[in-house]
Amino acid sequence: EVQLVESGGGVVQPGGSLRLSCAASGFTFDDYAMHWVRQAPGKGLEWVSLINWDGSSTYYADSVKGRFTISRDNSKNSLYLQINSLRGEDTALYYCGKDIATTQELGMDYWGQGTLVTVSS
Amino acid sequence: DIQLTQSPSFLSASVGDRVTITCRASQGISSYLAWYQQKPGKAPKLLIYAASTLQSGVPSRFSGSGSGTEFTLTISSLQPEDFATYYCQQLNSYPPTFGQGTKVEIK
Image (cartoon, rainbow over all chains, first blue to last red; front, side, top):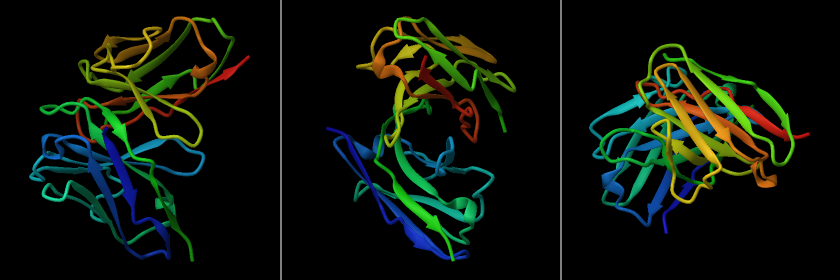
């Protein structure tokens, strides 16, 4: 059974940092690209970042570029998102997602339950 | 960045109705479009990928069509469990943007 479990969220002051983690199981982790997607309270989905299967290619939404860093450790079946210089608008539930395909991103077939990041002074 | 515009943003329908949601892209995205369903307090669920491929386990009343800039998600006969918010996502180019969502509520 495929499982994605996020952790690392919490309450942080503006300008602070957090490291989110996503532990994966039930599939061959290093075959797939992985995504981070966030959802602010009561709002829609916002794609945040993507990393390819071996970590050699990474992509970011303009709203987080330069502040967020995605990475993965295939030996630990884990995905990470380092988030720095946090702003109020970063308050959201952060989901990790597995892409369905191995050669071209086509969509996320498995999602975690999300980890909540709240930016507040 | 490619913008996706869903219409309508809100839809009120009855059980048994045929429902169609449209997603328009600001530029051509070939068939690199996915559709998701999200219920309150839950993670999104993939329904359709590559514009028209039904994800495993998704009921056949869901179907997707389109290519280029215009896409549709159709629910042939709305069931009580289908009341949710639906999102499209393009994966043709980075960043892979989402539409703003379409909320389907009970009439």
